[in-house]
Picture 1 (cartoon, rainbow, N blue to C red):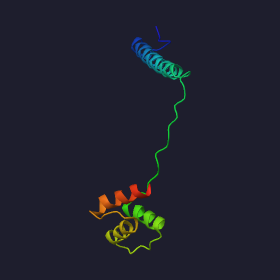
Picture 2 (cartoon, rainbow, N blue to C red):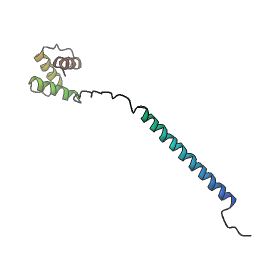
Picture 3 (cartoon, rainbow, N blue to C red):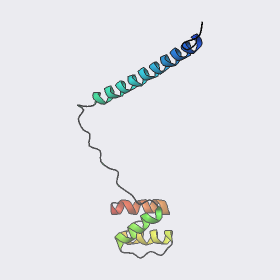
Picture 4 (cartoon, rainbow, N blue to C red):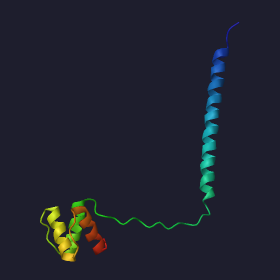
Amino acid sequence: MGMCGPSKEEARKTRRAQKERDREAKALEKKKQEAAGEEGAFANAAPVAVEPEPELPASVRDRVDALLGMCGITATGNLGDDVRAIAGNIGVEWTNLKQTLEACEAQLGV
């Protein structure tokens, strides 16, 4: 008697592979439903206003240059001297570069 179809072992492998694909498809569908449910839970939520963070210049040099421009002072190219000039112009006492720069920014509302 000849064989007309796949062997029993091949048929088992095919069924196992199909069952695994079915499980994966069900798991994916479940995840999609859960995600849709989470989105739906917030569908009627009141919108929340989010104020954007104020953009600050990226580097200390940029921050100092911005203050120099506000005060109309020409940059010397030396951060310490530039911060001292700004501080002297607006009446902030020099302590160190970081603290003085922050005090100058606070004084000028930056």
